[in-house]
Amino acid sequence: DAGVIQSPRHEVTEMGQEVTLRCKPISGHNSLFWYRQTMMRGLELLIYFNNNVPIDDSGMPEDRFSAKMPNASFSTLKIQPSEPRDSAVYFCASSYIFRTGGLGQGGGELFFGEGSRLTVL
Amino acid sequence: LAKTTQPISMDSYEGQEVNITCSHNNIATNDYITWYQQFPSQGPRFIIQGYKTKVTNEVASLFIPADRKSSTLSLPRVSLSDTAVYYCLDTNAGKSTFGDGTTLTVKP
Image 1: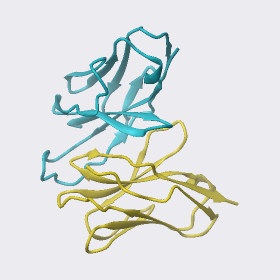
Image 2: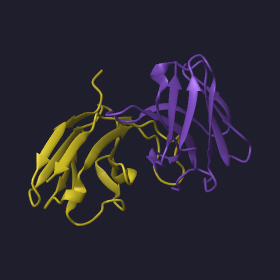
Image 3: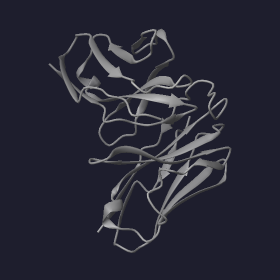
């Protein structure tokens, strides 16, 4: 079984450049999450989708960040323009949630990808 | 979702049982308690989840008291490969807020 697939695994870019991170969730999962991990801030939830619809993007740091999920098998996280402080490991995770909202039916096990390590010079 | 509180680090020796306790002071009625494990350069991996009382699977046990303000992850007979960061979370429909985690170091 293929897990969550992220690309690229490593990206080094210069300040001001556009960065696009990609994620393929596990087939059959209906929810997708983007996290960012740094030493200073730990793991932060940026945005999550349910049935391809963004449910909560309150964790997106600023307008330079955007995320899309055009279909159930693909999502992107874009940073434009990138800054050195965006350097981090970005994780994508997927899950099957029986019910969303306040009465979650179980917490939903998250399956994480290997991450995309971004370095902005 | 509120962040949980757990010890920053713990040391243990191979073959010992390890118990990591977490405080869930702001857990909501609909939240579940979930634990993840993370190795360096990898994404977190689900260990166990529960709502109350005790849950056991092939790798760990989870104890949750009636008031649900705390939880304890129990790892039986740890090995060197259990050295990792362990996170406890309040989870609702998959949405989880990760805290700082507990770095467990297992020594020979």
